[in-house]
Length: 211
Image (cartoon, rainbow, N blue to C red):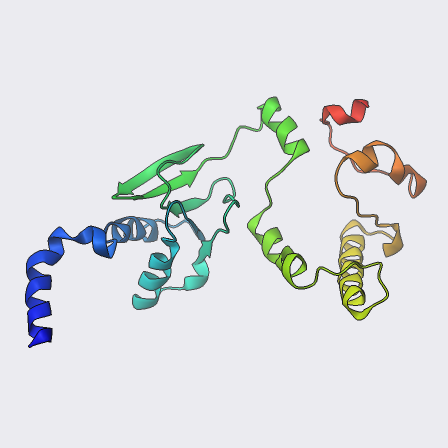
């Protein structure tokens, strides 16, 4: 009897209570799936709405690897297709709104905007693939690579592996020639000159190089 009562009430009142089921999300999800852009980035606003995308993808037999949930504070790359529960989006072109959800294109900024270039030289957002690669070293393998204990040696091994990869990419003769710094200031002040007379640099520099 309880099941029959529920079905009766649901069929009568369900269409008026879409907010309770976040029914509006399905509209932006379907609109995103109809577009060729992949992957689709999921950004949370006031609620963890990304779970709806994984639910619908599972039910419909879609590839969930095409959905990337962005961590809080991490923005999707420029040009990305985004489903979000944010009230509004910055630097975007809204494709569809449905209830509390929006589907938008995260627009690429003009390469000719020198003010934007100066900001990117100072601080650039982390690309999702870089964040994923670095995640273990932010949570589990955060040991000091200069330490002698096992925890530090594991981090050191990962650091040396990264150094070897960069050396191979740059065709450096010896991976020890690769020096990692914390940002622009160290190489700007000339520390790399101690190791090599060849330095890669951009044609446009941040004002810090004048110091």
